[in-house]
Amino acid sequence: MNTLGGDDDGVLIAGGGHAGVQVADSIRAADPDVAITILDDNIVVPYQRPPLSKSLYAGPIDPLPLRPQEFYARARIRVQQGDPVTGIDVAGHAAILRSGKRLRYRDLILATGARPRQAILPGADLRGVHYLRTVEDAAALQTELGTLQRLTIVGGGFIGLEVAASAAAKGIQVTLLELAPRLLARSISVQSSTWLEQRHRNSGIDFRLGTSAAQVLERDGRVAGVITTDGGAIITDAVLIGIGSQPNIELAASAGIGAGRDGVPVNEYLRTSNPAVWAVGDCAAFPFGASRALRRIESVQNAIDQARRAGTNVVAASRGQALTSYGEIPWFWSQQGTVKIQIAGLADAGSCHVFERRYHDNKLSYLLVQGGRLVAVESLNAPADHLAARKLLAASKPIDITRAVDPDVPLTALLSAASEPQLAG
Ligand code: FAD
Image (cartoon, rainbow, N blue to C red):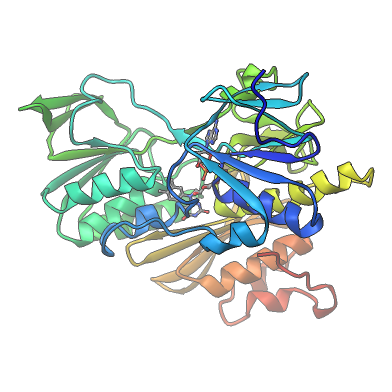
C-alpha cells in the first residue's frame, strides 16, 4: 500500500474552490494543530468564479485568488494540486488520488463543486461552442468575443444573461434561446423576470423564449449556425451553452454516499451518512426550510457559509462537543450590464404574493410574501433594500406590507431596533 502525506488524525478537503478554501480556513481558526490538506484537481491557484462571467471585457482573464498565496503557508494548510481524488476507502479512512497515492484522514470534506451540464445535440463539440466554468473557459470565450459579430447563447440563466448583457453592450448581435417561457424561471418571480427581459431587449438582445438549440451547424470545422427546437435557423459565429450545472457527486457515490442524487446528501450539520465525511458548497444537498427537503444551492454565499459551519462542526465533533445546524438565509447577486440583481431568501415564487417597491423605473424591489411573512426580496439596482432584506428575513417576523412597499420608508425601519440581527459575511 502506498500511503503518503496524509495524517490519520488530519483533515482532507477534496476541492479547492470557494467552499474548500473556506472550510480549511475555518478549521484552522478553530483548531491550531490539526493537519489540513486541500486536494484540488486544478493547477491554477484557488480562484473566484463570479468575475469570469462579469469581466470578459475588463482586460486579460487572470484568476482572482481566493486568498493571497502566503495565506496557505501562514495557516499551515497544504495545497496539493493537479492530482484529483478519484476514490474513497471509507473503511480505511483514506482518499485515493489519480496518481495512485492514498492519503489517510480523520475527516474528509467533499467540496468538489459542480460542472456545466453538457448539451447533447449534434454539433455541440464543434470549435466555437463554449461553456463557462473555469478560467480556461473564460479565456477561450474572451478570445472569441474579440473577433465575432454574432453570438448565440443557449440558456437564459444567470451566466448566459451576464455574458449576453456585456456582449450586447459591445455591439455584438446576441440571440438567447431559453426553453422556459420566461427568463430565470426557477430563480425569480415573473415580475422581476419581465422587468429584466424588457431591459435586456432594450439593449438589443434577441430573446427566443420557449425554444432551445436542436443542432449546431458547421462550416469549415467550426460553428456557423443553430437550428432551434421550433424549427428556426440562426446564423452565428459562436455559441455559449449555459443550461445549468451538475454537481460533482461521483466521488461520494463511489463510496456509497447518495448515488443517483442531485447533490451529496448531508444532514443539518453538513455531515453525510458516513460520520467522517462531510460535504459543502455546490456539490452538497442539505435540508432546507420548513419542509427540510434536500436542496442544492449554487452561490458564493452558500459555499462560504456552509464551509464556515462545517469547519466549526468538524472541530467540535473531534472534541466530542455539540454540533450546530446550518441555517443561513441564502442570498445571491448577479451583474447583467448595468443591472445589479440581488436576491435574498429563497422562495417558490409561484406560491407567493409579490409586492412592488419602486423608487423609479430603474430601481425597484419585489417583495415575496407567503402567509404574511416575507420569504424573499429581489432587488433590481436597489442594494440598500437587499441588505435590509437579509436582516428582515433573518428576523422572520410578519411585516407591514403597506409600509414595506413605500420607498420613502427604509426597509430597515420595519425591524424593531431591539431585535435587529447581525449579518454574516
Ligand atoms: P467550485 O468553485 O466549483 O470548486 C470546486 C473545486 O473542486 C474545483 O476547483 C474543482 O476543480 C475541484 N474538484 C472537483 N472534483 C474534484 C476531485 N475529485 N478532486 C479534487 N478536486 C476536485 N455565485 C454567486 O453567488 N454570484 C455570482 O455572481 C456568481 N457568478 C458565477 C459566475 C460563473 C461563471 C460561475 C461558474 C459561477 C458563479 N457563481 C456565482 C457560483 C459560484 O461561483 C459557485 O456557487 C461557487 O464557486 C461554489 O463553490 P464550490 O467551492 O462549492 O465549488
